[in-house]
Length: 68
Ligand SMILES: [Zn+2]
Image: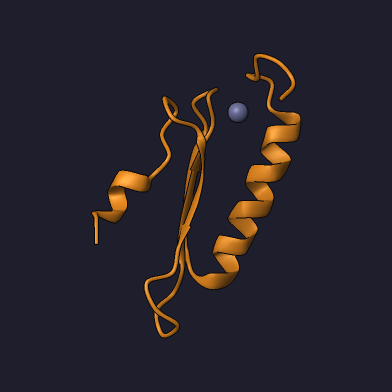
């Protein structure tokens, strides 16, 4: 397997990533937006919240360059 950190979004490569190594381990998630906003979370519930926050952020981000 490749290094998980390679998939971590950055402001230069915006997006959201959720990783769950195994059913017995908590999920980890991170997102980065082109505006520079980044956030990380650990835990299944927190990862779910992060994805929701990312979706909301994309809809409200003042730093967006246009609609996608
Ligand atoms: Zn943003």
